[in-house]
Figure 1 (cartoon, rainbow, N blue to C red):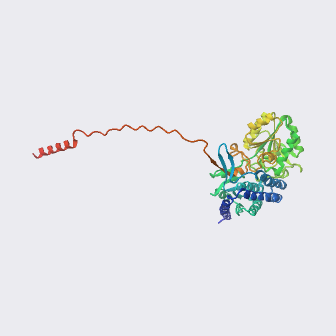
Figure 2: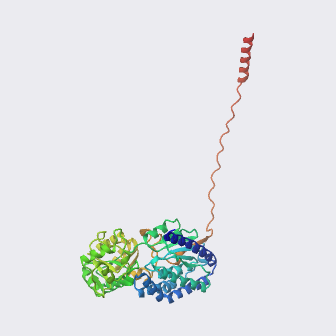
Figure 3: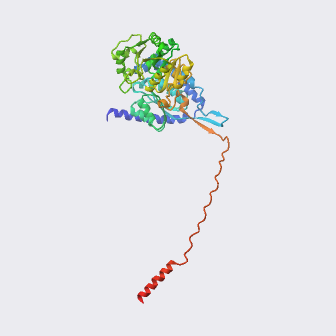
Length: 494
């Protein structure tokens, strides 16, 4: 039997085994009280934070994607910031009472969660999903990306060992080691899996949605940022370059395009350059766009998470050694302008529009082309315009006067700290929220009578009139027939 089939079969069997073990462990963990749960999850968060730097380096070395020190920051965010945001959330027993409506709310876990791990965030995703899953008393089984299997497995091991050391049953957190497409699909199809957290490519997210069970997926980013004439242009440029350059733009909430108001457009371009942006010429734009984006709109994997210098080398052009991002002046949003699509690389599209209404239309065009329901940014000091953008844009998160990369995930805003960003109905998702532990638990409700239920009774049915049976004929027909026959026979023999 070919080796590929051996891998597929072993991967599928491993998925079944891990889910079975997780289901058994989760049954026990579901009976933990709040103190016990928080002890386990707190220990996991601490372990993830301690290992943040080592896991960041490991992820960059294995995948060759992104920046190690930035991956460290993501690991720290996924452990420390996420734990701080969920540690006081009640997830066991009675979690709420509405005395006026006489409703008692009771937390209830999903059970086993199947979690996909993207190559772009292979360790921070494991830390983050482990914390929010176990805080809600679920178990979790990870399927990592094949090119990030080692670092994802190590992050899982750290989470699992910290959990068991704090009293959790073994098998509650695990990771597949034999990776294949069929194995990942088998994991998600297991009956004991009650929820799929599908962070990954479009095809796998769509497969998760097709299973007929609960699934939370994500959509593409391609975030537009409008910079109004009233904006603090110096800060706006700094925020944009910081966002696009962070981890070489592999977080989907990074700034994908700037739409600059015409009066400040050239100032914005100069400030971007001052912060490390290198503007490509038209020939360079064409070369990079054709090589980096495939005809179907997806990115060439060789370009994902590379530095500006690596991107330039791949297409045979030259850029300065100190360039932090590449910028491309574009005039349309369409397949004819490949760089107007989502780019998981430090490449920024740059548009100029005259007035906020034209800027608004361009931002909507970008979101509709790719990124519907995800995120957009706005740099502006006119509150009326800010509200108009909030009302009109088909985006679930609209950051104001900050980097979209940091603001959308809740790093420096009031949004829930999260590495899974819902796109809502606009983007084909079930929620527009930043996914956190409250999305991974059910809430049962005890409800008491507020007023009596005594519906009116229908009037008694009218009895139908009794129809008399037909009376017996005065003449017995059978007797008459008999006499006629007897007379006929008598004449024949007479």
